[in-house]
Image (tube, rainbow, N blue to C red; front, side, top):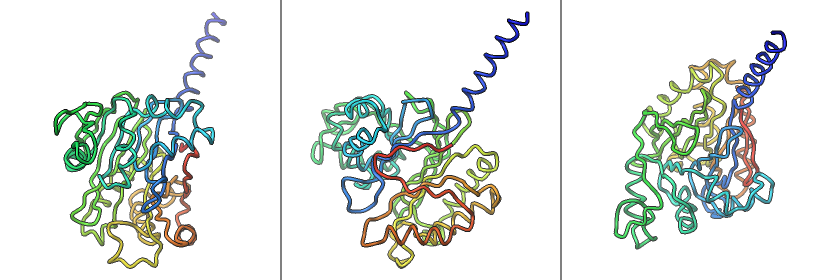
Length: 317
């Protein structure tokens, strides 16, 4: 009986340890910039810890990013295997070229996958990219012949959806990206743990919407409970960029204003050391160093600001 009880206790400890070990996500940035750096544009592979079932959040750069990730040791397999087997789905926040061109260019070599997005985003991909004029039709509908390599999955705002071929679910939330432009945020979940990824967005005050405020209402209870492991949020320009020339983007000042709105709902103490990945910095002049300095000086909440590097993997937990 003692031996049997010890075995049961040991199995329980192992199961609890495994549960805690999986409380988080791993990230491999394939591209981290906005704007003109066409070999390093927005694309982030994300999977639960201890899983190789990744989704790709936006897809501005794919091949060059995977090559760098393999070289840096983020993956122990070939670049071809990462593309064909590790990436299980694409989530496209909006169909601007710096968020989608990598997926289009690599589609000929890719394997069958789903593309998730809002209706207008999927419609643009179908009508303007995979149409046999811009590129062969790799989708499952549209201009004939539809090659059906990619299957479109329409997301409806606020509806939780199972992400096929992964352990995750997703809830898409609306963003405004320089009206009338639409963008999306993706709240991904695995075993009760969450990551919140933002596509391009401007602040509510300038965009004249309450989309960010509505998202903060969703995120706040997850932060209070410790379930939100990280946020990916863009800062495209330094504070010197005039508001009328933001074109649906954030500066460090606007970024921190929004973080403070979130803190009002979640509690300032809960924001301390919250992982926030800073995305979409536009590589113009010395703006990157300016942005980093301005964020640091305005980071009164004590956020753990992460500046991703192309091909260098990291964990958020």
